[in-house]
Image (tube, rainbow, N blue to C red; front, side):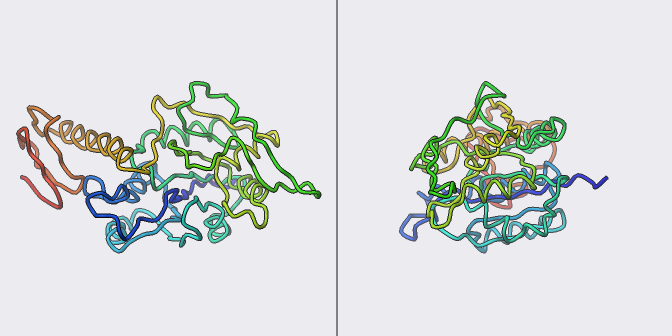
Length: 292
C-alpha cells in the first residue's frame, strides 16, 4: 500500500496591499515579529507537513524568514494570477503532478490571511479526516459537524456546464476563512467542474466542496468554538494579533518565565528569553532580542 501523503496549499485570499497604505496601518503587515504567511507555514510545519505550495505575494523579508525553515519542509512559491480571489486551481495546475494526485494523497488547504491557526488543531483536523475516510473535512465554527454546506443556485449553459454559482457565495469576501483537508484525486476534478471558461471571479474552495457533496461524496465539518477570522482590515487584524500575542505569552510562562501581569506585556515571536527571567508589566520586547 502507498504511504499516506499530506501536502499543504496556502492561498492568499486577500487583496494585494496598496503602495499608498502607511506601514503602521497595513492590516497585511507582520504580526508579533513574523509575517502572516510565516505564521501559517509554522502551523503547517507543526502539523508535520513537509510539502507546501504557496499562492501569495511574497516579499523579500518573508522569503528570508522562510529560509531558516528550508531544512524542515519544501516550500514552493506560485505567483498569483489575479488580485482579489484565492487561486487554488493555479497551485494544483502548477504542482499537481509533483503532489502525486492519487488516492493516498490529501491536500490541506489554508489561507495566508488566517495566521492564528494552531498546529494542534491542524493535526486534529488531519487525523479526523484520515480516520473518517471522508472526501473532505472542513474546520469551521458550525455546531453541526454533519451539516450541509448549503444549496447553491447554479446557472448552467445549454450543454449543462456550470456557468456561475450564485449562492451561497456572495460578492464580498467572507470573514471566516475555509480550512479543509481534501482527497487530492477528488479536489482536482471538483475544481474543474466549478471553474467554467471565462468566469472571471476564479475558483473558491467552498465551491469545490459544494460540488463534491452534490456528487454524493462525504464532506464532514469539524466544529470550532470560534470562527477562523480572515485578516481583511485593521479591526480583524487586531482580533488575530491579540490571539497570537496571548499564545506567545502563554508559551513563555509554560517554559518558566515569570510575568506578574501578562496582560501588560507584549513579546515578539522572534524574541528569546532565558529560563527564570522576570518580565515586568508595561514591557514590550521586539525583534531578535535575547534576554538571558
